[in-house]
Length: 504
Image (cartoon, rainbow, N blue to C red):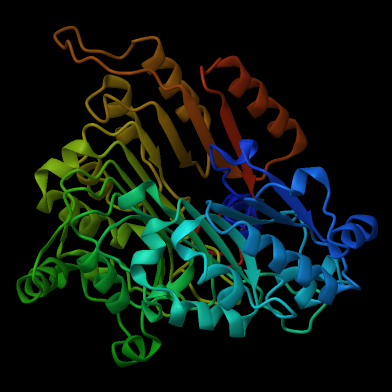
């Protein structure tokens, strides 16, 4: 829904990732900050640098300030680089993470990048010093960025302690911002690489085999590209974040979803045709799915026996958008590898907000005539993940009373601690369930099933009147949950005005 989605997308804004990670020894290094003040610049050019610059400089910091004497600044920078020829180097570009290029229109690209102007950052800084480059955080113009990808050897990336490269994307508009964020972490050398770029990394010469962490949540890739990355990183990948978009052409060829009664048979056929991908190290998988026609069947060959966190965000601009139709497929996939269903501790199923909405009729039917879905589909899914500690269900999945009753008894999700769900009406049912479970009530006399307390509750309800809103807040406060609560008053979102009933 719109309220929760806005929060999610804000947390994933590209600028939130721009704060550089400090190297452990950087505070003890001799450092210098560019652009130099006129007085210090004259001192350097005269051949009598300040006392702190007599020794080798190892840490170079660049501030986002307009530079009128870039030629002279470049001469001093080259001189210092030549003098610091035998030590590890750190280059850092400082930038306010809350700003975009549109907020600092007095700056030129060369002022920002030190690579689009007098200093060729690839040929004069990165490549000549690659074997001793300990830390790099810089801005690059599109041309220089492409040059870096072509020139940088694979082994060089693995030698770096930390890399944060920001691709400067300028479209001439006042609201211009940087490109999208991608992150890669390697196993050797504890190396991290944050790469801001507008293209999938498959076009770059990056070694996928040793990667332990891949974050591509803001770069749309195809299912084939996703599978390629999973195959190449299958032995080492621990954490993955991907945005996968189904082919519009393929969807137009098959305009109707796979009928539910044929769905498992279709999955089994695909599973037999594709070679399994064993991913024994994968513990966390976060997927953003767009136009994947209910369940993303490309997941079927992937076996993640150690998976502990599955986070799926989904939207579909081509077909009826109903979570209930996808639940059996997720149950089937988790059940393929029994060990993964026993290790899964976090399951988050969320709506994904995208713009523009191509089809007004995203959700089928109207909430006034939609029957309550068969809750056995949801129950089967929850029984497949008995060790679950955190559960987030989107507003499109309605949780009936029998499911909540089994949560009270501990018959379902005995280890659950964090719960997020939506209630179209009568939210007191959820309040009563949480209170009863936390008071260890509702247990049958012959049952000794242990169950954890609910320590956090996120409840999504239709936006009510002010009096009802105050009453709900009082009830939430009265539960005294250990880790707090979140009460969301949601209006009908633009993608499901009639389907979910929120905002009435």
